[in-house]
Amino acid sequence: MSVYVGNLSYDVTEDALNAVFAEYGSVKRVQLPTDRETGRLRGFGFVEMSTDAEESAAIEALDGAEWMGRDLKVNKAKPRENRGSFGGGNRRNNNFRDRY
Image (tube, rainbow, N blue to C red; front, side):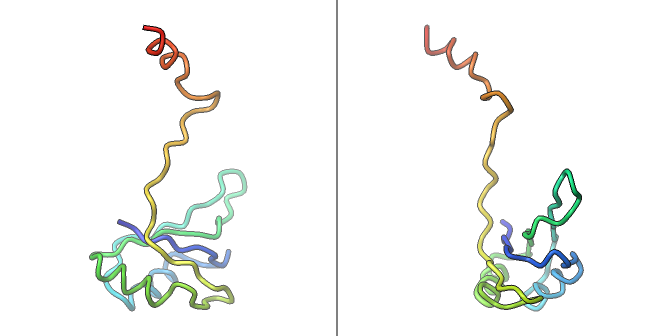
């Protein structure tokens, strides 16, 4: 499971975020998504830690904490929703199943 980190400064780096979370345990991975069109950071990220206990400690300590001039929003990451494809997804197959 990962930790969601929101309201990040657009100047944040993976190394800086890693250093903050490393105070609470072993960081396995840091991801900072970027906008596809502009390449700019999107203002949030994900941190994966080695254990649930380390994740919980980081969430407890950092949720609401000020860092780089912003109040962080830190919580357990939710599984990514399947948005489907453009045009309404696989509507044709669903209609076929409904008819028979």
